[in-house]
Image (cartoon, helix red, strand yellow):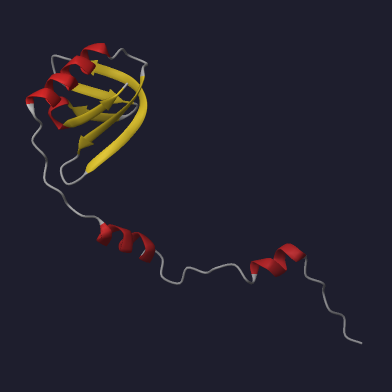
Length: 107
């Protein structure tokens, strides 16, 4: 009788794991799905609401911001690491957001 090596269950399962034959294909498909949107103009009421909220924000607060990044709107939640009213910049963790690109702030 021939001597066969027994395969462990984990090694046996690896044989049936999915294989990505085209590396980067999934990411390329997702990139194609992105829809570029124009920046919307905010009403006076919305601008006043944003200004009020910007004055309430303190460093280390946890907030959610929706902002325009040049081609789409992005939502980021995190700790405020910087609020510079002179430079008109809000920094949430490592994301630098100019005031004029902010559309929503959730405190």
